[in-house]
Each structure stands twice: as C-alpha cells, then as structure tokens.
Length: 163
Ligand SMILES: CC(C)(COP(=O)(O)OP(=O)(O)OC[C@H]1O[C@@H](n2cnc3c(N)ncnc32)[C@H](O)[C@@H]1OP(=O)(O)O)[C@@H](O)C(=O)NCCC(=O)NCCS
Image (cartoon, rainbow, N blue to C red; front, side, top):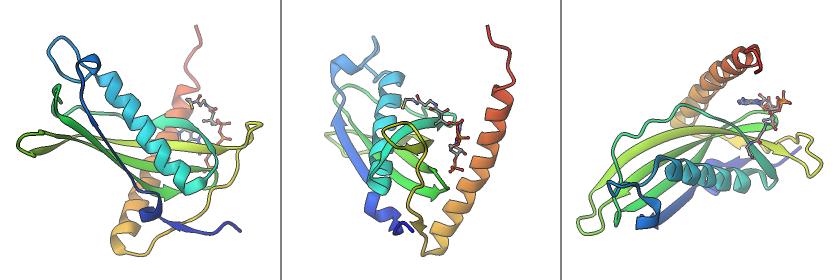
C-alpha cells in the first residue's frame, strides 16, 4: 500500500520573465510556449506526487483569456486535484504579472492527466491523495466528473477513421 500525500506536498509554482524570443510579432507570448510551460508545471507537480516516470495522457480544452506581453512575468501554479489508479489529474493556473505595477491576471486554466509508468512502459499505481477539507473533496469530485467526460471523448476519438 502506497503512502498518501497531500496536494500541498506537490504543489508547484513556476515564474519566468517573457523574453522577445518567446513572443509573436505583436510582442505577446506564443500560445505554444504557454502550453509547453503548462505541461512542464503540471508534470513537476505530478512527479512530486508520484515519484515515478509519467506520460501526458490528456490536456483538456484551453482558453487564452488575456495576452501576456514581453517583459511581463508568467506564473504557473500547478496542484494535483484527484488521483485515480495509475493516472492523476492536475490543475494548472497561468497568470500574467506586470513587473512595474504587480497587476496580476488569470490568463488560462488547464487540466492535464498524467499516467505513471515504469521504465519498461507498463502502468504503475500512484499514491492516494489525502483529501482533508470540504474544498479538496469538491475539487476531487469535479475532477472525477471531468475524467468521465474525458474518457468518453477518448472512446469517441478512437472510433475515428485513420488516414
Ligand atoms: C496515455 C497512455 C499511457 C494510455 O494508455 P492506454 O493503454 O490507452 O491506457 P490504459 O487503458 O492502460 O489506462 C491507463 C490509465 O490512463 C488513463 N487514461 C488513458 N487514456 C486517457 C486519456 N486520454 N485521458 C485521461 N486518462 C486516460 C486511464 O483512465 C487509466 O487510468 P487509471 O489507471 O487511473 O484508471 C497511452 O495512450 C500513451 O502512451 N499515449 C501517449 C502518451 C504520450 O506520448 N504523451 C506525450 C509525451 S509524454
């Protein structure tokens, strides 16, 4: 039996400055760069929870609510929401922060699912998540509902004709 862990034990915050190399012609960070950082932040939180190798199984739909400009900080906060058998869901919130004013805006919220694997690729069980508060229970219940919808979409996708 694996020992349980609290979400606070794996919660991860990443901060970096947006540089010209990350930006499009308008001076805003590229969506693909944000997606890459979301994947990294989510993976770090899940690695801290599982201490295993992981693969990204799914990234739910993603919105870019505000642009983040060169010179701003991009902040990513990742927190495990719920753990299943060999997979787990993590929420990643993305914020912009103006360096001179400190003004912060939520720019994206993403849910990712990672699957724990051994070096030979077979799935391995993940440690339980210790859920203590009403809020943590609600977050996990919502994650379970998202998981059901996600697996339904996967089942639909696997029936698509291949090229
Ligand atoms: C993700 C992957 C491991 C799932 O393999 P699979 O054989 O279809 O999955 P299984 O039926 O064995 O399920 C394993 C777990 O993954 C979950 N899972 C599988 N596909 C999923 C999806 N699309 N979304 C969410 N969870 C998924 C299952 O629910 C199961 O979780 P559980 O054990 O907690 O109940 C496999 O499809 C894969 O390797 N995909 C490529 C991953 C990749 O290359 N990612 C990018 C680079 S890391």
